[in-house]
Image (tube, rainbow, N blue to C red; front, top):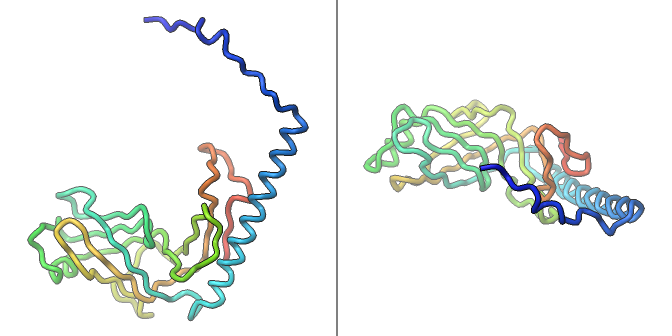
Length: 192
């Protein structure tokens, strides 16, 4: 069936805003984003300076079974451990004990770490720590550990102790960037 384009002929696409008003509005929006970024970055830098050993702390999270029958079962998209992926030697079952689940754990991959105690960040900013590598060794030489604390057959609770981050990153979650386009400098920051 052909599309009837005639119904679009009477749509008014004119804008009452003139070019000067448009530029003033855009400048005010950018100034607001710059101020918001400065406040977020200041809070993150203060947290970074106050953090013991510059980056070691514990973080807890809950992860849910994403797909039954696979060995890499868990991935969190929200919460303090965003992008957490866990790999097991075999698919977990509802009957597995907590000790069995911990024993079957092969690897932990982590993309982002929440920052406990971070306060004062403007609403809408997504701020997190970046670990030195995405893979967490289950027991490393510097004391970083990952342990499964609870398992109910479909979700688990886990803790990363002495989590290490090498950079802190923030993004204005209210600002959307078109795919393939660069984000404006006032919408993100990185602190090392």
